[in-house]
Length: 481
Picture 1 (cartoon, rainbow, N blue to C red):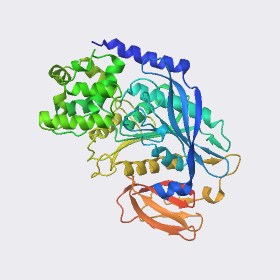
Picture 2 (cartoon, helix red, strand yellow):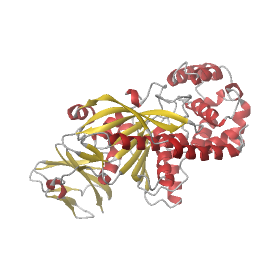
Picture 3 (tube, rainbow, N blue to C red):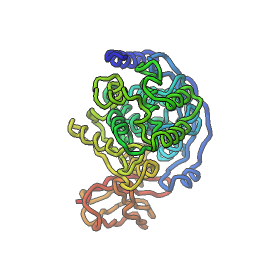
Picture 4 (cartoon, rainbow, N blue to C red):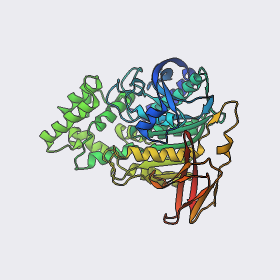
């Protein structure tokens, strides 16, 4: 059985190893481009520029603090002129297999297109065990989710220095977000940037979305419930990850019953994909247990220990990867949907409650669509994240003055009541008012560049005013009293 000291030793070794041999860009490979018109047709009119896509490989420590080479995707904004942009790390969700990686233009790589198209130098680490790095993927393992993000940010900075016409903005801004597993990974990365590297990275804001921040609570809830759960493969994926990293058991059969253990072994050896494992587990549980109820996969002794022995090594491993009990200092939004069928929404509510109790200055959990399931939550969460980040984002033209027509825009009154007025915008500017959850509340065109936008029918609260003409876009927070 695992000794508690091994957790501390692994954590110290990982940080030490990262300092010794990380942050080296190994190679880059051009993967193609996407035009502005292509991205706007795919993702909507808020997109401001096209992107160029590259695969990066870089050095980073593996789960055992040994040197490894990891891979990831970077989307660089592409517009005429010389521009400087913020860095943004998007942590991707659960993928199906090693090849289902952002650097292979799979694994949810479209997120890099969206944020790159919004004027961020956007990176997506593949994670360890996915793409080019070796070994089994340490699923929802906070330490390595953070370390690959830190080291790919470093590699991205080095890569951008080799490009013409593009730079990281002078403020060295960094934004972090992610969805599903990526929400957990985004929270782990944010915590690491704030606590371990505050002098190296200028983290501006973070938006973890629909993430399992309470791994220990989510696992116990899933195992203790008698309800059917149609994503049972997440449970062995988590166990296999922690067994791989921490050495909890000598064999899968010690923790899981047959025939489930044999199926999990096939997945561990990369003979089947995660979706194939999930489908087979659902069918097998339905046939043998009368429904897709994950607790029937677990050996009785382990099931009892997880529920009743908080000092069992499995419970220690689960708690070691919870990412909600700390105190973020930068503005943080936890976007979620109450009807999420994969990651229960209480993860976000719990994180909000604990972080605010710890004294976090600006953390809010926001339900962006109470009726949406996990897949349906993606779009509103992304829109809300874009609007949340935009007022903080600095995009500047290198060696040139800011467009005066956009720098002189004013809005008022602040706070607003019946209306918000816009002054000195370009003629025919589109003006859109959005709720914090990403839903549009009002749309108008300012023919002369000046005008009033009614707010009287909206409840008191915070909104985003989006002003757009062509590829120029600015977002200003509006408070209605």
